Image 1: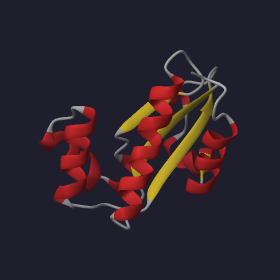
Image 2: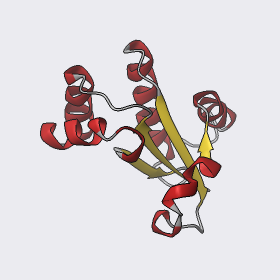
Image 3: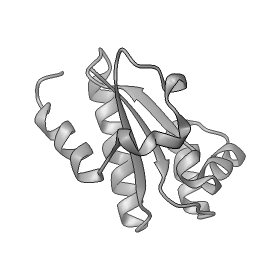
Length: 116
């Protein structure tokens, strides 16, 4: 199993993105704007992959990727093993847990149809 966290790769004040997070994930609009303005430090989505809710989490991630692609706004993805905790990571070395958008999509594609 993997744990995924997603942030905007660069600070943004795009109100459309904040509204997307607000409507799609029931985040407060102000909270969404604050997280987005923090860029790579403002993780707005975190989940465990390959659990009982994998299909829902996969859809969430694909929706985020699609929306941000349409806005031409880059994302930062972090992936850790399920036996690791986010709080145990050194904030100065988060890049060692970073994966590309393509790697994220490939991970999702490789498990497509296995969870229903």
